[in-house]
Amino acid sequence: MKITTLACCILLIGYGLGACIFALTGFNVLLFLCAGNAIVYRALLSLAGVAALWLVFWLIAFRPTKFLS
Image (cartoon, rainbow, N blue to C red; front, side, top):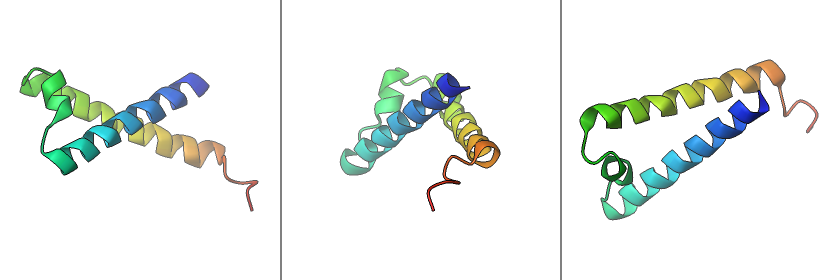
């Protein structure tokens, strides 16, 4: 469970950095890593959705911020 959550966080941080590079320079890092293949590109983008849904589930189910207040 902990490894999955860490992997999803790392994945989303990587996507965020790629999006930042694309926003600032116009160079799409993810598309470059996929060698221009649209199917692989869409598959990798779908992983971002799965990772985000997993983190939402994790935040609802385990409430890691419950004891911060």
